[in-house]
Image (cartoon, rainbow, N blue to C red; front, side, top):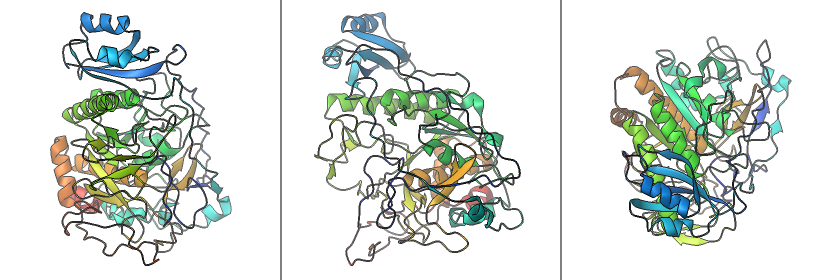
Length: 511
């Protein structure tokens, strides 16, 4: 079995049968009136810094503000404060002093500190986006939708897979619920997203400091369509245009945390969670890992600081009411194994193979306490060939797609991938745990709509209790070559492939 692209869970290679590095295809707008193309938002650069400057997080005691003593020590060590999140005690700093972190860790009041990257600002790109396969307007127009369906909904095998089509007969979700897409940016001008877009809860966090410039949350023409696709999977409006989201009546916001080169650095992720926490967001979707380390090892002082900073931010968001949902990853790793070989870290400079202990080295935010970790299933309802797994790590599963050669959907759907909006008023196919996570975020939004006063802990409890228990797929030989491709541990009610089960949208609006 060919392994997926290890670069990230943002876009993956479909094993054996898909030649593209990123598996998605554009469908032209099939509505009566064409949507305007998304204006290209100017890329928001990181704050100016000296050559060889790095970004750091400095973690201090939360709640008391940054003391003048620590501020002076940061300056003395050659650092410049970009911003400070006093409520969680995380300070974002730039410095060209190679010994900055080592020096500042010795300062009284500093609990941890570390570089958020290994390449100087700005980082060099290691893109994994391939050439899209374009479908013609004639092909899109050939789709026959039933009464009450959006035009491309018949191609969305993933909706009935979680009973979202039945759920929509009862509820589309509440306008009082907002899901934040912490991602590459969202094209809010797309006709499937515009009706449900929450501008007040949207922002650009790339530098680590919120940029509220109008439209700063949008991806530029050169950037990934990933965040727009994710946003549409969650809340594409049921409006007679394109596709339908899992929760087409809720609101969705864009929190852009990916820089122009496609990296999701700690300072941006911290900013994203903090913005969501302070702007009434009910659910966050996190279909990424925090660069440059796939796994952050707590015995490394730099990586330990990154884990601490993102943990503080995600916990704060949950304390303020947000359910944090994250993709499990696309490498077919057993995240509960004794060891894993990580060949891609650090991905912004020179990666090398390293053997890690998953109990000590964490994929963040995926493996952080309180985060809902989502595995991916395909059109036949079994674990996607690429999906990470692990007993006690995976909480729940949902459709993320798979190669049609492995899991072929029932007609009229033709692709085993997930269909969603992409910038410029178009639609395309993608696959990955990146696509599974927003399905769960959408179901969580429906639960919050049904139980508007439920705290995050109760929403999560209902999410797991209402999931359809799914036993292990055993043996798991996804490509039929006679070799076992992954081992599932656990029973029907909770196991390493599906967690508590496959998300159930109908129960979310009925119970």
